[in-house]
Every structure is written in C-alpha cells, then in structure tokens.
Image (cartoon, rainbow, N blue to C red; front, side, top):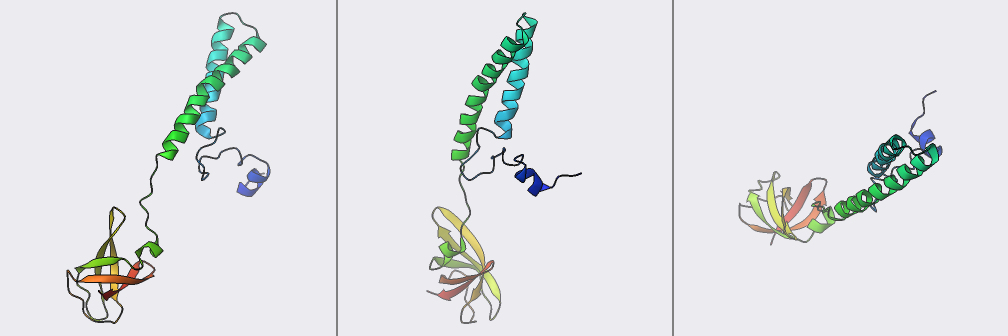
Length: 154
C-alpha cells in the first residue's frame, strides 16, 4: 500500500519538516534532525567504545545531538532571515513613470523600463490609446495585463 501526500500529512509524517514554512526553518527541519541523528550515533558509539553502558551512551549521544543541532537551527534561522526578494508585484508598477526602451508601434508592443525601489524593471508594453510612442519617451503605467503593461504618454 503506497502512501500519498494527504495520508502522510494525516499520519503526521509530513508535519515534521517545516523548512518551507513562512517563518523559516523549524527545529524539526531535515537539516537539524540529520545533525542530531549524526551526533547521537557518533557520540553514542564513542561512549560505547569507552566502556559506557547502553543507557549512559544513549544519554551522551542525545545530549551531544541537542548541543550540536541547536547552533545549526539558529544558523539556519539566521540565513533564512537574510533572504531578500527581488520580486515586484503588478500593483507596484501601476502609476510608475517609466521610459520607452523599444518604441511602441501602432497597436503593437514595445518595451518600457521603470524603477521600483532600487531595481530597474523592464516590461513589455502596449500603448493605451493605440498610438506610436517613440523611444526615450516618458510614460506612465496605467494597467498591468498579465506580463504586459499598458502605458500612456506622460
């Protein structure tokens, strides 16, 4: 019997890995768990080699796993917090002033460049009144339709 995604989540299996959660990686992420398991096994084996019994070696392994997995968890959280997004949303474009990079022919498309924050964005553009707009002409973005912006002379 194969388990699909819904059955795994219902069984609680898929709920353990939260790497892609919006808040960043959790303590039960695969990276943190893998460090814990590696340390648990490694230090447990070393403790057994030095004559410790099963229970003390297991406790040494568990404690070592927690000690080594904790900095990995905090480091992963730190890295997650350093991420930046360069995505620009469509509503960010509406009302922006841009400049025609490739002329817009009658009823055709050209290209417009505008600045959103510190980022230059190039978009395929169409004239709102279906007229020619020459290269280097300042325009205002009135609407976003899919990947195309509708512009008007400024």
